[in-house]
Image (cartoon, rainbow, N blue to C red):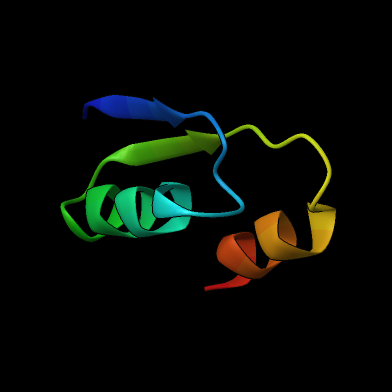
Length: 45
């Protein structure tokens, strides 16, 4: 399995990139600066 690190994963193009990678079966790691709620929303999806 390939993994991907998405910086800025809670806003802008980050969440879309992370979701696309997850849909392709990749293990996704996110970083974020201040929007923990958005990062948690991704984790729940």
